[in-house]
Length: 258
Ligand code: COA
Image (cartoon, rainbow, N blue to C red; front, side, top):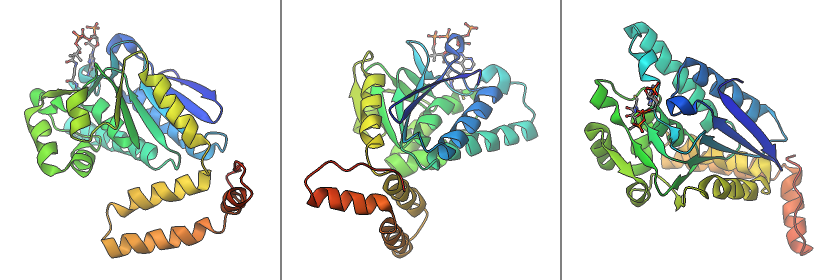
């Protein structure tokens, strides 16, 4: 894939958006490549966790490609938003944990991309925000829905309506990023965390992701029913038998994802 770099190591796939000269801005090609890359992640049993980051020193992703967007008709823009939403839904629903390593600017579509990941680590110099309204636009890749779910409606509206950029400390304070690291460390720390997750039982990770993500749109009673069904499903896995047996035998469990 021309716009993404991919590197596999011990069950962790690192995917890097690679348009550093444009601060990794998301044009149609990048969106299509992300869609295909995460369809592949979902299918490939050798991938147990993913790190998503941006190329270069300055940016995770500085937004959707403004030059490309400026020429879109309303119906093209609608389709562009749907394609972006589909690609980002694929990240959220790929069934493997995805850790964003936010190594600089994460603006507009870049912020939305990070929001579609399951865990977010940021570099101390990261700048995060939703500047769409400063361009006469609104969010189009799921950000108006995911940001309030993560940080709450009032806080989300402060940032969506102002279009201001927040620093990493503020993003951490409001719960938008999980952890902050020095710029030189953020990708390695995200990779180490992903490697730890890659050692967990893969089917259990998938079931846990489905419960949390699928439960967001459900009532408490429906969500708990989903949890109970998935809890039952976990007992159908070889990994559950291995995990509990290894505990009793005081050894490290070896999971096969079955
Ligand atoms: N879309 C298209 N191109 C972008 C881009 C975007 N979202 N963000 C940056 N670029 C391009 C710039 O046009 C420039 O290209 P050029 O060298 O061919 O002129 C290159 O990336 C470097 O960006 P530059 O603006 O020179 O870097 P900077 O350090 O001065 O500023 C930012 C960094 C992030 C503050 C600035 O690039 C910016 O405001 N980008 C847009 C952010 C945004 O509004 N995103 C939301 C879009 S909905």
